Figure 1 (cartoon, rainbow, N blue to C red):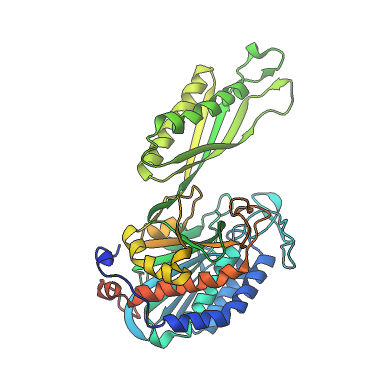
Figure 2: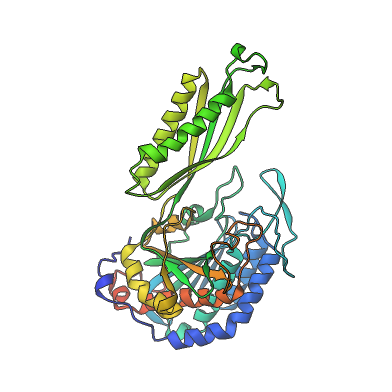
Length: 439
């Protein structure tokens, strides 16, 4: 990982391209909105973003980028823009996939798409705003390509599939992109990303140093009993009653066994499946849930405690118990020094009164995998219309999730200014840079 120890000692100032960036963003804003509407009307699920990736790749080639790689982690696209002046390398990332959600927003470009997801027929919707992220980064690529001669260093554009997880039985997402060289040849010194959110009004940028978004792990607990007639429960072992005791017991993992003065955590059971008839006690019950935490050591401790507690409660009821915990995404940790250094940039872009230090988010992001390789900063861009209470707006992942498109230009400006300010900073120029043009 690059050394960022001197960042706080050398404040990063506005780049020489600042005014030209803002003018270019104003000119391209209608096109960014048009791209977003097209992607919104034609959403694609994880590892199936063929149309989206094709549009992105063609756009990057048309801009004359020095390199455009496709089919990275199935459908990912990576572009490299080498500036006209020597300097370091910075990466910008956007995710492209939609969700298996049926849209309920009344828009002329609302999604009518249906697809198959894990064996089920589902509606498909950009219910988390990845359509905006893709359009924003395409806009940033066009803005910076137009300023290539004055660009100090190189910019890597990473368009990622399957942020919302790939289909069952498949690999994908940020981790696979890294394995296939998305952060190599050349390796960036820092990476920036963003997420639109209904929790903030349009015009506001949210940020947070350190742990910002939670890790996410899938939990499956299967309680094994012994089937019997519902009228004679003593002849079997009731996995339904045992599962109920397990659910109640799991609530004590967070409330009684973790030091919550360190970091918050969540253990949630979201589904319980068992039995087919009201008067038959089944052989087994399956529970599925999620575990969220903001500290990797605490994360492992939760896994151990959940497993021990579920198995112990089941043994006390003469039932068996199988616990499977699958790690998905690590904690999204914004590099504290990088965040501090780039705060003035965010303030200039949003205006000091519209830059907000946000609380921790128990949602997760696989941008965290990129941050495990290079220092990263992940920010939030508000898209809730003025006059609407963000606490009452439909949240991300809702079928009623709505985007105020006036927030898109702010996203383009934020990423473009973050990239150029970082590239031109004295700190970045003095770092152990990868030679421009290296592959």
